[in-house]
Image 1 (tube, rainbow, N blue to C red):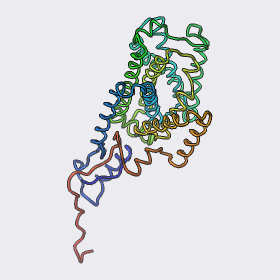
Image 2 (tube, helix red, strand yellow):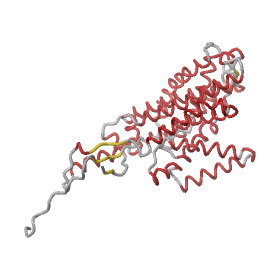
Image 3 (cartoon, rainbow, N blue to C red):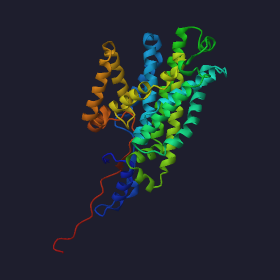
Image 4 (cartoon, rainbow, N blue to C red):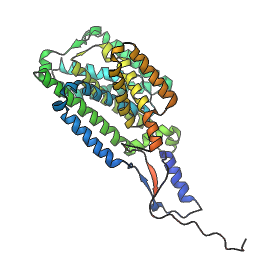
Length: 376
């Protein structure tokens, strides 16, 4: 069995047509197949099971680190969602904090005046955020490139200002969850930490699985084709607007759920914290760019790098941000595809194989015989 080099979706169609029409060899359609499994798929499955088991048992052998791991889980979910939006649809948004804040405030409204159970309010907060993202998308989708990025940031700023002017939502000072609402989660703080940890890790795993399944589906193939060439995607019948719109709303829904869970753990919310550009967008972009945009493994690696640097430089004040900026600049200059992009190019290592490649099945076809000796 012979492997072709990795091809982009549009290139797969053209390469298959070229191979089938090539006069040099006789190649039947049934001798070609599209393969998505990576060389290390079994090792990836074993590693994934080991990580899930370690996370499931962490409260019993490393309970002091539950809050840190829960925070990492929420940031991983946000990074995967932003990567899905920017790395596959080309929608580079710097206003994702709008959905984090809307999700958080939706939860406080559902738990406060409406009296819902906090955990039941998390998916509903995501649903409300997804619904609110529809008119937002109708506005920002009229913009392209840098205008789209700035437009999403403006929308986030408008959301923050509107909520800061609302006395019902606590205005600029924000609001806290009532003690009775907090006790609905668990009576003791230790038990609440375990609940928050389980919800955070579970939501991160669910987001990761959703992104992986989506990218392996026909919709994911359309997203990858759009990323490679939007014009070529339209020429082969892909509805680029509907594909991008669907992805944007789904990302908003999931981001709203993550935001609601973040502020449920904090037990308090304010406009400045909920719609913070640095906390919910800049940090996420740092993780994705450093790790490798357009890959599932990249945000995971970027998450580890960010939290490693944060813990290492936490005692150095403003130097922490300076070092982070220098690291980002070095990576953008020396490894534009991120650290995992370098690994992928050098070793073709995929823990979450979603790229398609052409494979020839069966023996190598023989080239047609040339003209007999002595004949012109």
